[in-house]
Image (cartoon, rainbow, N blue to C red; front, side, top):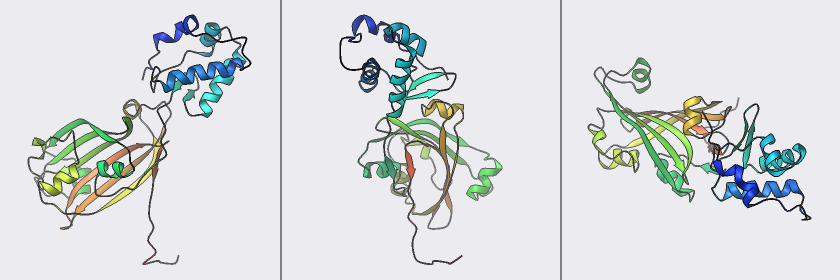
Length: 265
């Protein structure tokens, strides 16, 4: 994934410059200059910073001074240095703990007083589901599966890539609805009268692949959380089987362990 290198970076010395008469150390001046570009949005998440050599030449600084500025930016979570590739602007980090429920992604995020949104990447009908979906969803012969792939965002920052599979027999013609906005779970309840009883979810850590790095705006290598969820109706039929990939750095998985039915090991 090629990173964007802003053209404006190389004209800063002509317009901004560093004050060599100031009592503020030069490394701190450079750090604040870069930080201001990041926080103002002139530098976007994923943008590549100029190399150490380029910064040294642009601002007439020693490599030690430049490295100290970059080190502090990294300590504050504003940039990430990738060996052999350089420094990149980090996406904003949130201390986000979502209490996952069957209310749906939109309500779960709004409950944390943040703004959820989604981008619909794919909405299609699988006429002959592969064997892994047949088994995971306990499909009957002839059952079709609706595939929905969505990029989940919080405050316009990518959080997760979510691929859901729905049993089309239980929600016929659902592809005719606007699936780019709103909650699919609410649609299943309101339009189809389905009662989502419970879900089972399994999570494990992994490294993001190239597609996930691009969509989630991550720099290689990046840790992610992979989740598989099976959602059942009150009839014990599987309505949804989904796979999700979450940004591992700022997403926390919260679980509540109940005290009843405790078994001593």
